Length: 283
Image 1: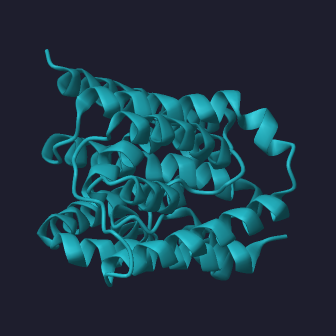
Image 2: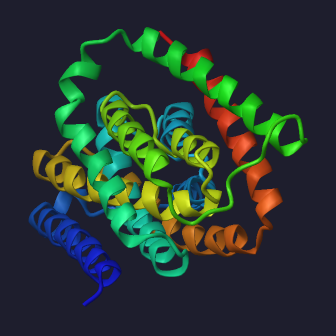
C-alpha cells in the first residue's frame, strides 16, 4: 500500500466513523427525522461548489442560515461541521487521487495543520479575534498584491512546481501550523494556503489536496463530537451533505479544466474576497 492509498483509507475510515455516529443518533431520535427541503439542498450544493474552488463554505453558510433563520445561532457551528464534513471528504478524496503532489510533503503538511489546531488552539484563542482578523486580512491583501505583481511581470513569477524546495517546505510547515491554529477561531485555511503555497513556488493545484485533506480530517473528528453532543440541526446538516457532494463533483471538474494562469487569477480573487470578509467582519 502506498502512502497515498493509506491516506485515502484513513479519510474513508474517518468518514465512515461520522456516518455511523450520525446514523445511530438518527435512529435513536425519531423526532429529528426530518428530510431537508429544496432550499437546504440548494445551500449545500452552492456552498460546497464554491468551497471546492477554494472560496470556503463557512462564511456563506452562516450568512444564509441567519438570513432565512433556518438554524438557531447556537447550533450553526455544529451544523456546518457535521453537514460539510462528508463533502469535504469527497473533495479530499478527489484531489488527493488526481493531483500529483509529493506524498511525504502532503502528509507532513496535513499533519502540521491538524497539530496546529490542537497545540496552537490555546495560544491563538487567547489573542483578540479582532486583532487576528485585522492582521490576517492585511497580510492577505499584501500577498495578493505580490501575486498580481508576479503575474503581470513586475517581479519574478513562481508557482509551477509540484513539490516544495527544502527551505520552502520548512516555511510551509510553519504556515500550516499557524493555519491549523487559526481554524480554531473560525478563520479558514483555504485562502491563506493557496496564496502562501503559490508564493513559495508551488502550483496552486498542489494546495488543494493538502488543504482539503487537513480540513476533512478535522471536520470528521469534530463532527462526531458535535453529533454526540446533539449540538447541530439534523435537517439543515443533511441538506448540506446531500446537496454538497454533487456540488463538489461539479466544481472539481471545473477546477481541473482551468489553465494554470486562470487558476492563479482565481486564487487572487479568492484571497481578495477572504481579506475583504476578514476586514469587514472583524469585531
